[in-house]
Length: 174
Image (cartoon, rainbow, N blue to C red; front, top):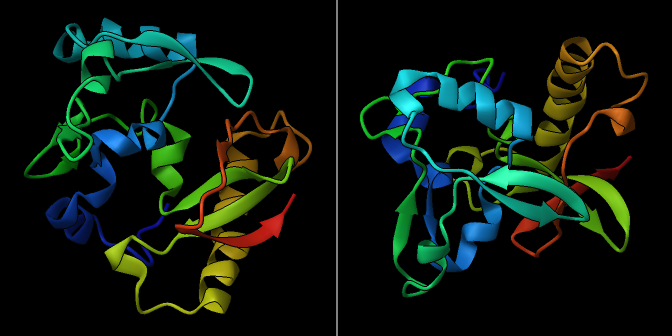
């Protein structure tokens, strides 16, 4: 989905969005219970353990282990679906939407749902806010609508928003 602004090769060489410092484990993608079951049916991912968590009031599943939470805040925890040579090893239909649209993120800011972009992603450093806004409006939103055609508007697509932090640049409210 993001191939026009971030190449798969560049992302596979960077891995910024797939390795998390313990203090930033809140940033990890979440899965519905059904998505987690589908992933675990694949023999390659049979040993990945999901646990229930609540994000923005919504029950979901995460791969973050309780033991990860007690580590040094600067320790790094890689996503279990990360292949260090090629990037995400999940098939497209199993890859969480949060990962498909990164460095864009649905967030809650002052109780309102917004689309924001992470300025920490090194791959987008050369893009202006207007360029990033145009890309999300012209490419990402139409793709989300197409993939989720049972939903009438973008605000009805079941994305689980993360709480807004200043590492993100708000683009628009929806």
